[in-house]
Length: 302
Image (cartoon, rainbow, N blue to C red; front, top):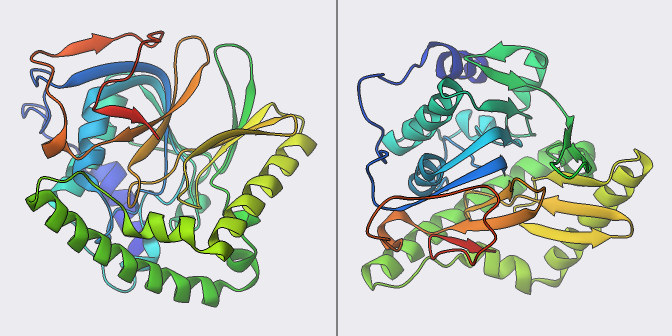
């Protein structure tokens, strides 16, 4: 299978040159932050919609003890139709493997778009652990259930053909996103997601997101955990539903968001601006995981 071959080549055979500095090296003057844990998902590598440049930049300037890749990292669906791979996407893989080399524990929790990797659960590829779901304990003792979340999407589980049809329409909308971003960038305007705006305006989409969050939180409560971290719906969120802390780390095709945990167990959503628009601090600044001050322009809460 093409997906399996890519997975083995990318994580097994692909090794970034040790002598070459990363695209965003330690001597860069941008903000640098340390976290206890970082959660990212829905990067959709291999597609036109993947925002690989800001993702590579985020990985280069945010360190952590544990990095969770919470599904849909590689888009196996697009691989069968219209595969697209760029140097920036290779840089994303390189940054992940550099974290492995630096001692970061990297855990890959496959989603529906990279479901081929679920057959590898329990194995290690280039230092990346593949686990279908797991429990993460925060610094303050909370137990968080980590999974992609597609099992709670009735369209995915009961009518996969319809999900694939919707995926094609979504991919087309993301292409319009890219056109709009290119125009706004040329005009000096910040990134703005058309697809995200539409999802918040369409009543059915808003109801679907709310229902998804409630169902996931309910299942987490049945499992006896304190909270849940997932992806899948491309909607970054931190909110309490009943007695459960529901958290979604968002995506890297629309919002460019990540969920991070600091040294004390505090959770925060970061929205990473396009590298060309990020504020420069004048020198590289390292912020410890326990930092509680206001975030800089490069890392704005969603």
